Image 1: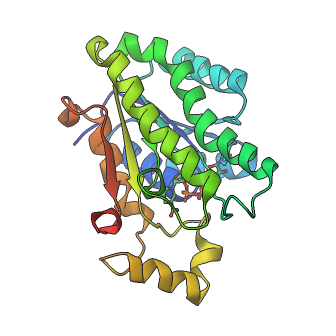
Image 2: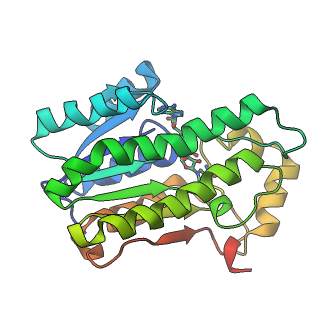
Length: 243
Ligand code: NAI
């Protein structure tokens, strides 16, 4: 599967799953713009991978609009947006304070909407596509993850909704729903024996994934090989949601 000639934005593309997607896109021939709120991390990753970097906080709509405009100005078009930036949260609704809810929803759900809304006029021009990074916790309830599950559930249905609205105009919208993946987000959790065992025991494949095992699905979804695929929320979870 090739992405030759395509221009892609990957939000949160400097670490974990986003970085693996950015790297796989470059290998498939795409021009990639990494968008991240962390300047140092973003520049370092972009230099290593051969990408462009634009500092962006996805919670700020004007910043996401500027990211899209810069990308189109420099590359002439925008073909793919990967709304990947996200933060974790591990509180039940009783434990959680309202600030945590607002913060998680702001990054994990509003951020996806911002990337979608800002990019749409250009994706309509290019008949491009959107790849959202949701989660298994958008498909089923995540133990002790009230805000995160709500936000990811929102991403899952938003993916279907936007897909329905723009399918006839040639824009495809899908999401990837990973199970547990070893990244900087999950590292502190997976380092504890109790949490690692929880993931192992609830994953039929008995292990978390590596980011490189998620990226190929993002390449496929962005490629012409996925030309009839829209509105799908695809688990990539070692079997977590199969039981
Ligand atoms: P990560 O922490 O390595 O990467 C997240 C990236 O998003 C970081 O580069 C971070 O700087 C960036 N980011 C956070 N807030 C931002 C903001 N406001 N604006 C711009 N960038 C921002 O974590 P990971 O695991 O690679 O997560 C990527 C996506 O995958 C997230 O949406 C996460 O919810 C999702 N996911 C992760 C799973 C896992 O087990 N690691 C499982 C299922 C989904």
